[in-house]
Amino acid sequence: MVKATALYGHPEDPDAFDEHYGKTHVPLVEKMPNLQRFEAAKVVATPDGSELPYYLIAELYFEDLEQLQDGFASDEGQAVAADFQNFVTGGVTLFFSEIGA
Image (cartoon, rainbow, N blue to C red):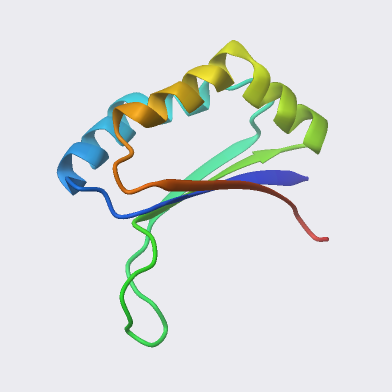
């Protein structure tokens, strides 16, 4: 199993980010082919109480790298990527990883 992880930086307007993310972006993500599981979580604390490095973390799970790549290459996956420009003002880091490696 593999996952795509998106680390969202702190948005300029958190309320606008939350509104768009929940009502527009998540429904786009959920339409991606081959997606097995999706989780999103707001970052609330660090172990040492330091400044939070990210605002939100999203994880998209797929059976294997080929299915992940096919999902992102699909029209639905391209719509997800294109939507970033509509709400991401704090930057986003996206990477793929293998679970249990």
